[in-house]
Image 1 (tube, rainbow, N blue to C red):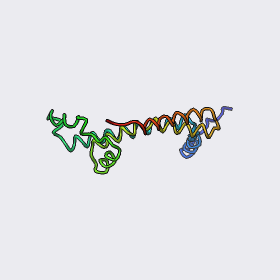
Image 2 (cartoon, helix red, strand yellow):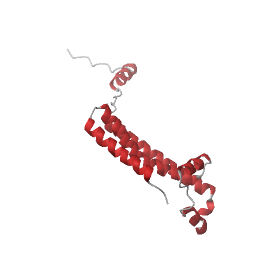
Image 3 (cartoon, rainbow, N blue to C red):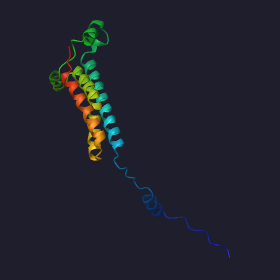
Image 4 (cartoon, one colour):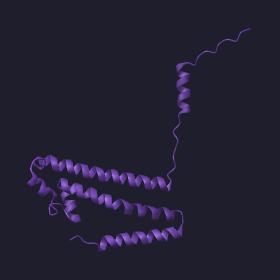
Length: 151
């Protein structure tokens, strides 16, 4: 007796087998993953703000492409907002240079947020030694921001 060849599975059986075989793997949120997501998101937000600001600036002032004098005015230190309220006011008024400055401020803020997130992680893990070290680092960073000035 010769064995009968097996019938190929029907399309419905194939689809059911494929659906059960492809299951989404749930990745738990580890401290390293949280920190990497914070850093990636911060860099992407910063890059987006700087890019939007540059596009807005050159779209509103096409003479920056052709006039060296106009470009010199744009790149002079006096033309950019220097204080935080000026940046917020410029963003609300949709000024390109304020968006660029906001992007740079986000880039400066991201490492500080990373230290703050690390502090929260160490406290959740009840690691008092690293929590104390991270607290002092965060305090020094905040103190430097408060005492630092722009000339």
